[in-house]
Structures are given as structure tokens and as C-alpha cells.
Length: 294
Image (cartoon, rainbow, N blue to C red):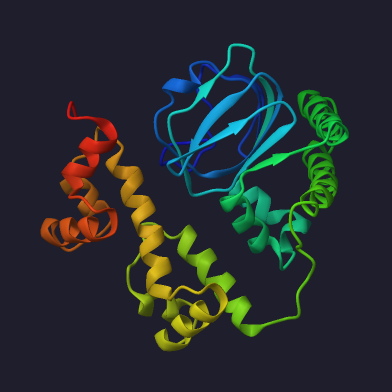
């Protein structure tokens, strides 16, 4: 996990079993309840083995207990979280770039799966499914920790791909992700969301994204409405507001700095935008979520 940087980062209090630029294995987190607000830039999977935890994702608390798996995709915001004293888990963090290189990720339903996890990040696994996860976890970890093994990265990729195929069967219990008939509109929509979610700072202009996708703004908005029920502008605003929400929760950033970073023309326009979408002025919203000591 990281806070606004591109390098995979794990706090010093974590018991990091293995870490490089692509993958991190974690088995213990200290002071997780003091983590604060963190923008997650990586794919994360946590499987609870014992105890319980309450993790705040995008403002909503999610409880995980033994045999629960928490899956977080990039570009979400983790808030204050708490764990029991006996909380025991296994965690794998994968960089975005690495995941996109895996053969399985080229599947045309990948974006649908990621959207599913955004809405339902906690899955209740069976005991056998947890055992399978731990088997893959232990095997990958042992291979990565052994410097004498040749082709370690290639071996990791193969093991991880095999695990993802197995886990894909698990996810099928919770939703139907069978390939759908090809639709040009659905493909445009997925490309738009991928571009939108990966952009920073995010343009608030539909024309900007339409130009990047070689489309007209009207066609892009029509496709978004048909596929998701929301216009392109509504989707853009939803993602921009997520960035605003995250930055306003950072105590060291002034409202003016946030306004400039997100490329709003001036403080007045930024204030009206925040009031429209969050119901409060930037200062009032910050006081509401952080208290008046900021």
C-alpha cells in the first residue's frame, strides 16, 4: 500500500515476509487502527485466519472474520481500521503494472470482476478454499525467499496465474462472470472507466476522455447511460469526488493546495463543486471528518 507514491510501500511496523516492486507478502500489521486515510494504489487480498477486523473502505466499515477474504482494487480509499488482538491473516499486495502483465488479466470480463469487488469487497470462503489459498501463498512465499531458485519471477508468474484461475472459480459462486456476447458499447465503457480511474488529476470534461478514446462526447455519454445507467459526466464527477474526499482527509494539505493539485480554476469554483457533491464547503467537510483541530 502507499500514500500518493508509485513505489510499493509497507509500513515499518508490518511483518513483511517478502517485498519487491511487484509483490508483497504480509502476515502481521501493528497499529493498523492508526493507519489513517490511505489511497490504495495496488491490488490487495487479505484472508482472515483468526480473530476479526473492521476495515473502512470508501467511508463504509467492512467486518472480516475467519475464512473471510477482503479484496481491494486500486484507487480506493482505506480509512481508520481496527483489529482484534488475536487477528491472524495472510495478505498479498500486487502492483497494478504487474497484474496487467498476467495472462489472466486480458480476460474481457476483468473490469466486471473489479467492479464487483468495489461493491462487495468481502467474500466468505469455505474452509477448503482458505486451505487452497494458504497452499498457494506458502508455495509462492517459499520460492521467492529462496535466492538459489532460477527463474524466480517466471515461477511466481506461473504460480500466481494458477492461483487466479482457481480463485476465479471461487468468485463464480458469488456472481456470474461468464463471457457475454461482444458489444462495442460495453468495450467503450470499459475503456472509458479504465482511463478515468487511472487518470490523475482527473479532467472533469467529457470531451477530454472522448478525445482520448477517439469518440464524440455525445456518443460516449450515450454509451455510458446505456451500459451503466449513468452519464459520462456523472461517472466523472463520482471519481473526482473520491479524489477530493481523500485529499480533504489529509491534515497536511491546505484547501488551496488541493484545489491546485486537482486543477480547479480557482478556490471559489472548487468550493461550489465540493458543496454541490458533498453537501458542505471544503472547510466544513474537513471539520466534519477530521474534527476542528485541523
